[in-house]
Length: 371
Image 1 (cartoon, rainbow, N blue to C red):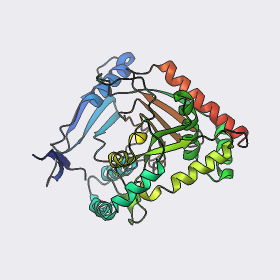
Image 2 (cartoon, rainbow, N blue to C red):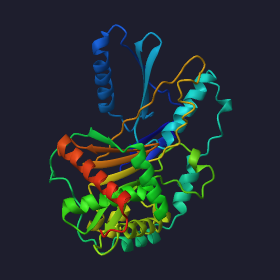
Image 3 (cartoon, one colour):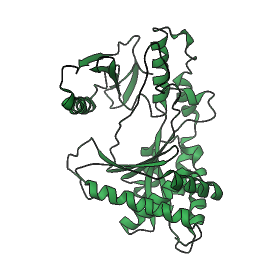
């Protein structure tokens, strides 16, 4: 999977090509001579430049490594990959294998058996695309227009690197919200989607809105799919219809049921869904609920890895949507708003976050109030 390249054929289609052997480029940068007061700024500059450096899709590998020496015995390892190779769920799995290889001096005999990605592709090829298109067409029937939040930007060249702002709920707020969700029989993901649906409906003056949601795309029918490294995610439309006589709790239950009914059809590509459902399936905002299999013990400062300790890990990615709402939870619910700086400023993005948290506060207070 990690040695794949993508080349265009004369008929306009792209083919995935697997090379026999691929050497991963590894760069080294030494910042020990840089004055400590400006070393952090120089590191940020390097990371920003690295994220802006594009891959040649026809040449494998579509990933690279850079080892940055910050001080004697202190390093930053930067792994950059094109999203077409692997998704967010795969990244902790890849890092775990990389650390294992480090500890064993490159001996891969102790790694788990690789579940071939071709098994997923074979499963995908067996699915009934026509039946899936019909389901999505019914699910989005009656939505006649795209749900667009961003100001018109057709023809403008936009920045591809988003800005972001973040807001965290307290542990107490998170516990209360989780208890309310559990009591209503819904997931935190559904709560976030309903909250965004309500804010989006207000911002667009509509009672029927559609936005995107990133789904894991890992079918339970494939044994070991949870440990496979590759690209599985898909973006699918989420429809939130408002009935002002309905309670908030009723809305939560209905959206959860509607989304559950579409689980078996998450494999259909977004372009196919939009072709089947029409303009109503078009949107420019996205929600993501992150729940990755991170090995907290392996990333603990107390864990000795052949003389090395991992003191922290962070990730950066981007979407092409003007607004992306990312939620993740541990003891606290973390909300991140990513936005294209050519279309939005920090004040607008922060205002959207506060509106979302206001809805969440309302949900935790009373789910019987009408929408």
